Length: 434
Ligand code: NAP
Ligand code: HSE
Image (cartoon, rainbow, N blue to C red):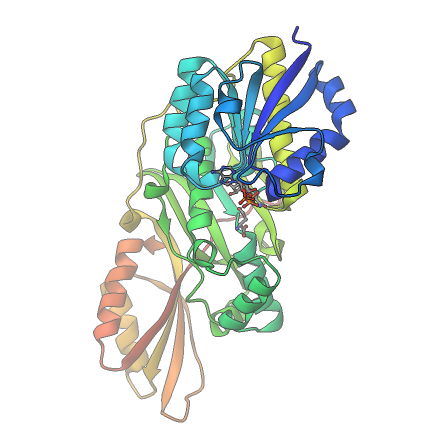
């Protein structure tokens, strides 16, 4: 048995510094759990002169080769972020026979196949628990604990920034712009908030979750994405009145037409387990044919919570080194990719229209929906405003996406419809409460 397992850390920012802290604080227990000592041997930094007291006693380097070519290092932990050179460093580490742990959803969602193939070719482990849901255990639970199931659905609140914003808009009636400013001041949203508010961050996590849930290599490019920028306090108020909350969901569903993977805001029934996940918290709801429903909840980001997941991966990989058992849970995608085209996906919809308030308008609108084979579940009309306009809010029954698009095309062309103000999917699946 190895006397010690040596680790090389690439990056020491928010997550990297948390990894160092967890390893140091919990080393006694970690050693007992692995059966051998783990040693953080070297840390790659950009600026070796920058004061980093938490790294005292650990060798710093600005040359990645010092880690990748060190034969004594058997685990490389990538917490630099970004695609290049993180991807190349991980590939080189595996090529050199080292197992790799990463928190990097950007690389996993776009280039996971390259990394898995490299891990396979070189008989090493590749782990990425922290890439979805920060500290929440979800990747290994799907790959291991729920592997007896056929998973039909995975729904996630996987972006804390947008969940914080939607929670504030709902609780305090704040506008989108005001809540974005507050999220930026609190450090949740970046100066350029696009990755969060346009849904790209959630889309990367959706691709990773769906790949694992459905055992298919689903990439970022396979995910249809819509963010929260069009959500208004009016939509949120209608949702509340109708018994829903508005959430940005990462959705993976198995259908007869293949897997569909999407990120978009939804009207979620108030009684759905995900509806009460508020603020920056994340949660992933899974439906399997043996377990039924399960939900994983916790902090989706932050130095120590994310380090909790990264260090768990380091421990598991180290156990594999001790037991010579590599690749147990590397790539689990054994199925050919089969995706359901967006037009064929089915949902109920909330449609908010600004219309002229005069006789025959409701009839014209109902006819437009009917001609596109869209059946209506309920319709509300608000009081007319000073310009003799009123809002009509329709909730449809479950219909193919193609039908709702056809209905919108006709509605937009109707002279009495001044504006289609929003279109949001309504999550209607029944929740089994036993
Ligand atoms: P961060 O605070 O920006 O830290 C990244 C660190 O990597 C910085 O210290 C940076 O050095 C270093 N770095 C970047 N490029 C480098 C290079 N080419 N050579 C050497 N060092 C380099 O980022 P983070 O928040 O820790 O995120 C790291 C990863 O974890 C990302 O993939 C992120 O998506 C993922 N993640 C983060 C969270 C979270 O809560 N923060 C949660 C889940 C997953 P400088 O200090 O010199 O810039
Ligand atoms: N920007 C992400 C969020 C955290 O707001 O949840 C990192 O994945």
